[in-house]
Length: 111
Image (spheres, rainbow, N blue to C red):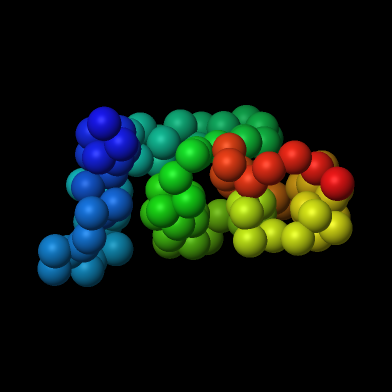
């Protein structure tokens, strides 16, 4: 069942299989194509976006998309210490240039 959920998100969660061009990350997933278009519209309107996923691998793929588009973002996952989490939340709230906050839904609670 978990493999089906991954397949529905993005095929790169199973490996790249020789797809190394930057646009392959977007063209390989309809969901990422839609996210790319939506983020551009939200950024133009001055909105901020929270994106959460149970799969940190999916957050890695979204981070690649954001880096490719030169979009500033922050991320919290299970590897981020509790003290640093609050700093990142504050920074996202205060910095108008940060568009996206990537969150792992399995990162755990706050300190």
